[in-house]
Structure formats: structure tokens, C-alpha cells
Length: 259
Image 1 (tube, rainbow, N blue to C red):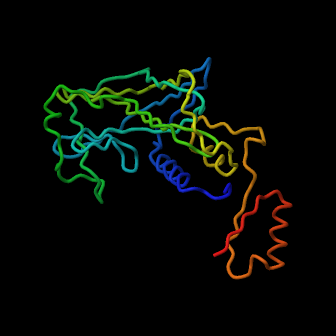
Image 2: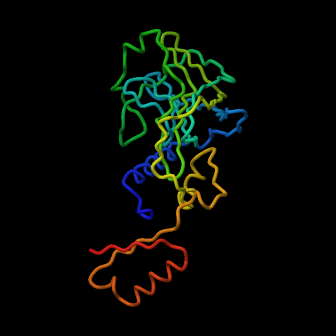
Image 3: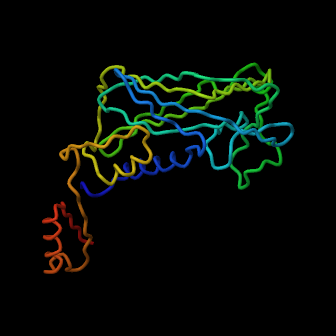
């Protein structure tokens, strides 16, 4: 039915709300527009270094996004949802616009989920990594699979604007980065199952999708719908029938179901 959210759409909503909770308060993505099949978003960061325990420094802030590989460096990460064309393939490239290096710093290893944000003891540390010349993370940009929405498709873009080198105890800070979203041919796997938009969903996407665009075409939106769940003989009650007819006159698609 048009007016009922499927389990899949409820899961998509939960996912969107989850990502919205990890947006940084002081480091927001900016949408820079597009030109000739390429769009760009940018991110500026300014880390606050907090001395934690045993000589380790912490960059992540409570309630903010960060890397979560147990025993590996806990580095801030930033996410945004980006609307894409279901019929188009894309490639995603990250550009380091400005950067600098912090020397002689030991980044706190992620300790896992705990009731308290403060760390009193280092219980988890990947010593093989911390004694190596390997840098972390291997990739600074992560792109999710396509996320189907009501009438649109999205991806989640996650940026970790840091690179830590444990052997030299150096932290590269990418103070400004740009993510380029480039059209890369036709998407033959286009399978958007809910092609019609919803004004209610549009309001939700507007606050969470950095480049969201609503449509000016009425035929791209589903008709408003309402579901009445009836018990006993209420479905045949004259007053209820009048209500259903009034709703239809107001432009609603009306569904009824008996229990």
C-alpha cells in the first residue's frame, strides 16, 4: 500500500537518523555545487587534542563520530548523506586541499563501548600496529552502498581527515578536504522500488541530505494516503463511511483493514 511504510523503509529511516547523530557540531560539510557531471563537497577540521592516559592523546569528542576498530587509533570521522541519480554510476575522489603535521603524539587506541567516556585504563592496544611503520587509516574516504529512499537514492560519505604514523609518532591533519562526486556512465542496476516521492520524506531528507533537491513536478509525488484499522462493524458505520468519503474528496487514497 502506498500509505504504509515497509520494513525496508523503516530500516532506511533508522539508518538516516543514526547517521544524523554523528554529524560534527563544529566541522560541517559544505556543498560546493556541480559542473559538467561533477559535484564537490568540502570539509574543514580543527582538532582539539586532549591528554588522556599513559601519554596518549585523544582527538575524538564524546557524542561525535570516530573510528571504532578495537585497539587501533581512535580518530574523528565525519559523515554526510549525498543524493545521487539512480540511473547514473559515480566514482568518488578525495582531494587534500590543506594539511599539516603534529609531531611526537601518541593517539589513544579505541577501547570499545563503555558506560563512561573517560578512559581509566588501556585494555586494548594493537601492539603489532603501534610498533610498525604502517599508517592508519588505509583510506580516508569511505562510500556506502546505494541507499534507497522514497523517490530518491543516496550514499553515505564518511571522511577521516587524519593519517597516523605510529613509528614516527606523527599525525597528519587534513585541515581542508574536498570530495569530488563524478558521473561515470549509466547505472544498469537501477532498481529504485519506490519511484514516487513523498512530501513527508522530503522534509526529512532536506535536513539530512547535503545536496537534497525537491521536485516541482506533481506527478513525481505519490497521492496522500491514509489507513483506517477497524474493529467490529465500524467499517460499515454510516459516520465512518462519511469520514472515508470526505477524505477521498480531500484527495486522499483511503485504505481500510479489519482486525
